[in-house]
Length: 454
Ligand SMILES: Cc1ncc(COP(=O)(O)O)c(C=O)c1O
Image (cartoon, rainbow, N blue to C red):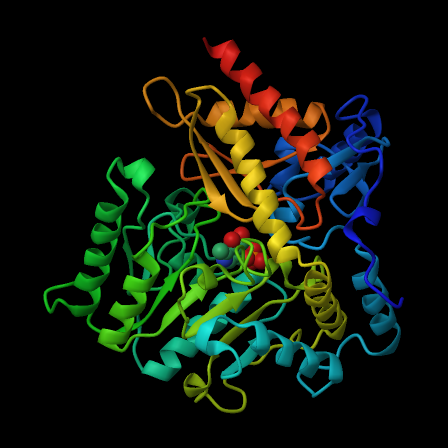
C-alpha cells in the first residue's frame, strides 16, 4: 500500500442500516456465550449483539445490521475498525516475526522513537519507554514499580472517581468501591484526593481546583497529613470511566507544581485520553504539563493489544530485569501502532477530532431538555451528564437513550460515578456526515427519553 487511504474510504457506505436489533443470529450467539463463558462478561449484557466485521467508524453484526460506532471499543479503534493501512503492516509482521521478547527489532525501535517524538512537553526526545504487556493495567503496574523503585518510597496518591485498571496495583489506585469491595485488602498506602468536578460538587471551577490541590498538598506536605513516604501521584488528565470529567484550568498545572515542590513523580494515565483522542496527542498537551511518567494503552495498537509507560530518562534506574514479562515484544502490535500514528499524521486527525468534537458537543448542548445537565469533553472524548428534575443522577435515562440509539443503528456507551454519563468516543476517522447522522439519532433519543419523563 503506497498511501494511507482517506477517511471517507474506510466505512460501510450505508451505515446506519438496521432491521431487527438484536437479530436472531445475535440472539443465538449471545445464548451460546451465556452457556459457555464467564458470568463476568459485561458489554453484551447491555448491548446483546454479535459482531462480525468492522470498517472505519462502522460495524456490522451477524444479522447484517450496520451501525455507526460511537464508542470504538472504548477509545481503542482510533483510526477505525480494520484500517487497511494498519492491517497491511500487522498482517505482514505476523508472517515474519510476531514475537521476540525484548530483543531489539525494527518495529520495536521505530515505535519507541516515534512515541518519544510525540510525547508531551519535556518528555519529547528525553524519555525512555518500557512496554507493559498487553493491557493498560499492565502499564499502570509498571508505573507503580517504576515510581517505587526510583523514589524508594511506597505511598501512592490517586483521586476519587479514578479508574486505572483491575490488576491489584492498578485496582488499588482505582476508586471504584463497588467493584473493589470483594478484593480488599489491596495495596496498602494508597490515599485518594478529591478530583475537581464542579458540576457534581456544585461549586465554581476555581473552588473545585483549590479543594483538590489542598487535599494533595495535605497528603504530600503536611506532617500531620496521611502520607509519610509518597512515591507518586497518579492522575487521569480527564477522567474517563469517572464520566469524562475535564478538570478546570489550573488543576493539572497546580498538581505539577506540587509534585515539583515535594519532589514526587507525577504519573499521568493517558490510557483512555491518549493517541489523539482529545485533539492533541495526549490530554497533557492541553494543560501544558510534562508528566514524569505517562501510561499508554487502548488506542495505541488500534485493536492490537499493547501498552507502555513513557518516562523521564532520570527515572531509569531499575536496571536489567527491573520490569520484565513475556509479551513485551509483540511486533505485530508495534507495527500497527506505528502505522496508526502515521495515519493520524497523514490525515491531520488531531485537528479533525477537535472540530468534530466541537460539533458533537454543540449538538448535545442544543438539546432543549433539563435531562442534559452538562456536556463536557475535549476533541472526540465527549460526555453528557444526565440528571433528573431534582438534579440527581439519572442513570436509567442514559440506558434508555443508548437503547433507543442502538435500535436505530448508533452504538454508544455510558460511564460516570453513577452511570449517568452518556459517553461518545467515536473513531477519529468518523466523517462529519456520519457525525451529523449519528447526532440526529442521539438527539432524537434524548428528546424521546425526556418526553416520556414529563
Ligand atoms: C484511564 C485508564 N487507565 C487504565 C485502564 C485499564 O486498561 P485495561 O482495561 O486495558 O487494563 C483504563 C481502562 O478503561 C483506563 O480508562
